[in-house]
Image (tube, rainbow, N blue to C red):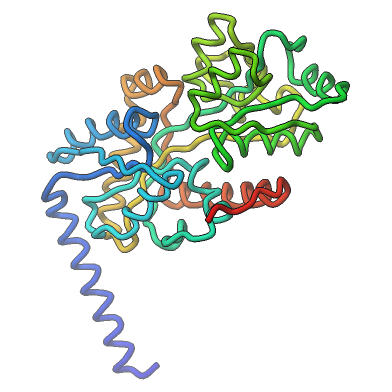
Amino acid sequence: MTWTRFMMKMLTLGLLFLSSIAWAQTYPSKPIRIIDGFPPGGATTFISRVYGEHLAERLGQPVVVDNRPGVGSNLGASIAAKANPDGHSLLIALTSSLAPAPNLYAHLDYHLLNDFSYVGLIGSGAFVLVVHPSLPVNSLSQLMAYAKSRSDPLRYGSAGIGTPLHLAMELMRGAAHLNLTHVPYKGAAPVVVALTGGEIQMGFSSVAAAVPMVKSMRLRALTVSSIKRAKVFPDIPTMEEAGLTPFNVTGLYGLLAPLHTPAPIVRLLNQHLVAISHLPEVDAKLQTVGLETANSTPEGFKHLMQEEMIQWAKVIKDAKITAID
């Protein structure tokens, strides 16, 4: 590289740095939009609104949730990746939904690692392995023994092929070497109906959906999928405590911004997210829907996404799940 080209490059970098500082000093200059790839009323919308209220107070601009459901939340991700990278458009990302996408969908018009600036985690939620009360099992070890003793496979349900609950069950099936039959439904609500009605015998459920069913003894909870016990199910062991190790399936919620969002804006948002995650009232609100607060650095969040992408790529390959066109 010649001296002239070196100086031009340094000048360009310096101008970009000064420009990003100027943007950060005037940010935000209008309402902030959190794009949600799921329909209204779900956990992503709930956690976006809880954090959005506190971000609005801290930043002095309204924070609105823009639901753009479709293609397993990938439509919202695509819209966010193409948004103006000025910090006014963010994406609420659920890792257990987005991380498998590159191996589930044949045609994605965005790259999960290369088209976003990672801001930070805001929450987490475990799944709960539940069975119909008619099953003569009270633990994971009993379930595995019972499943292996049968000539016909147990039936488990999910919200659809490639959904987080489906992949979590496939991870467990492969790790425990069980012969199970997958029954996909159109959404999570029909799965709960099928489980309580005895149409299927087992499946993973979100904590929020499982709590009332377990408390009313319409379903029996055996384990939680995360590496630590769920606060609302303190007596239910983790999969690893129950003997299936290594096993960790945790839905992580975080915020992404379009690539090239100025670094000072990303850092500012991350600082606010970390502070909000430590507020007791925020944790209390999240617990009402079975979630817990979480935080991370931008780099830490991206690293966790990479790890999940690797994990789910292997599960999808081993289970021979066909990519969706």
